Length: 308
Image 1 (tube, one colour):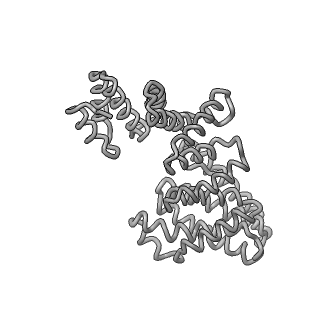
Image 2: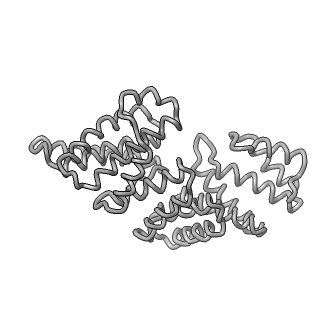
Image 3: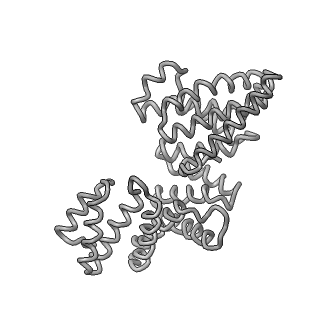
C-alpha cells in the first residue's frame, strides 16, 4: 500500500516498481497480449506517477500518466470484465480533472492528455473498491485520501477508512488516517482514543507503530484533546513529547505539529502564571517559519499574556 507520508522509502519503492516493469516487459516481449503483464506494468507505471504527484514532481508524473494510460486501455480491451483496471482509469480521470485546478502551474501540460472527469473517476474507483480482485484495497485507500484531501468530506473518507481498518485491523497507516479523519470531523475525543491505542501498540512493540512520524501525530492529537478537556498537566506532557519527536525528525522546515505544540505550551504556561516560561515558547515560535497565525499570535501573547 502506497504511503505518501514517508519519503525515506521512496528510492526503495521506485526500485521495486522498476523490477515489476522489467519482469512485465520480459513477458510482453514474448506475449504482447498477456493481460496480467499489461495490468501489472500499467499499475507499476501508474503508481510511480502517483508518488511523483504526491511529491509534486508534476512533469515526471504527467509523463508516467501518458505512458500508463494506453497500457491499461489495452488490458481493458483484451479483458472488458476486468474491474481492477478501473483503478487506473479512475485515478487518471480524477487527477486529470482536479489537479490542474489545485495546481494551475500544470494546466499547460494537460493539453497533451485526454480530459478528466471527476465524477466518472470516483465511480470507477468505487466500482473497483467494491468489486475488485487485486486492486480493491488500493481503490479504497485512494477514495479515503481524495475525500479527505481534495473533496473536504471527512464523513465519506471515514466510510473507506472503516473498511480498511476492518480489512487490516493492525495496520498503523489506516489507524492513523482514521484518527486524523475523526479530528477533521471535530471529534477530538474519538481521535484521541485512536491515537492512544496507536501509542499503546508502539509501547508494546507492535510492528509499524513505533515510527517517529506516527508517534508525533499521536502525541499531538492526544495532547490537543487533553487541552480541550482542561487537563493541562496531561496536555503539557504530550505536547512536550510531540516537540521532542518533532525536533528529532524535522529537517529543513519545522512541522505544523512542532509549531502548534510550542504555541499551546506557551498558552498553557500563561494560564498557569508561568510568564517567563511562556515567553520562551513564544520567542521560539518567532524563530521558526510562519505556520497559520503562529507569528502574529506569538507577538500578541508576548505583549499581553494569553487568558482562557
